[in-house]
Image (cartoon, rainbow, N blue to C red; front, side, top):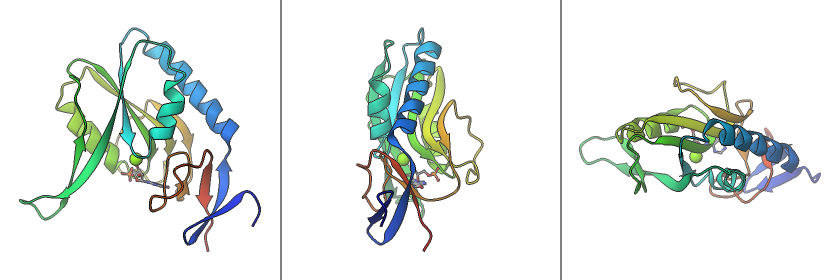
Length: 181
Ligand code: IMP
Ligand code: MG
């Protein structure tokens, strides 16, 4: 297997975005945020688990006054309905009238982000901005405005840089795309 190929559990992946390409994009986004959000005292909300690496690299380059926290979507089976309900947990700051910036690893169908935005709206922030490292335009099913996008990628399964396959691969500092069998 070439050094650009790795095996994770039963799947093979090939490197698709290398370290310097990713870091250049993170720097570009940080630069735009430092300019756009300078007077806004933003609060950044990193979505766990996937966004931890993007968030860490990005925040080291944010130079304006800001607050940072991390949220998680917890699934539970509702007692009233039969469906699975996803609840955003970990909000302990007052978001009212704040500029909130969501940090995501990837936007695929947009379901997750849509859920997050709807729940955050209840806290009456001044505005909600969205930053995502990866975006699959072919997969999106919701109408969501993305303010900062690292890379648009094809509708293929990827791991690395926070993204996982059954919990594995999050620690990879580069992004790998699944190779079809
Ligand atoms: P969405 O709700 O369909 O937009 O999917 C968002 C979530 O699905 C992400 O936060 C990831 O956890 C997961 N996801 C979507 N695509 C991928 C992928 O290619 N690799 C790993 N996880 C993914
Ligand atoms: Mg995620």
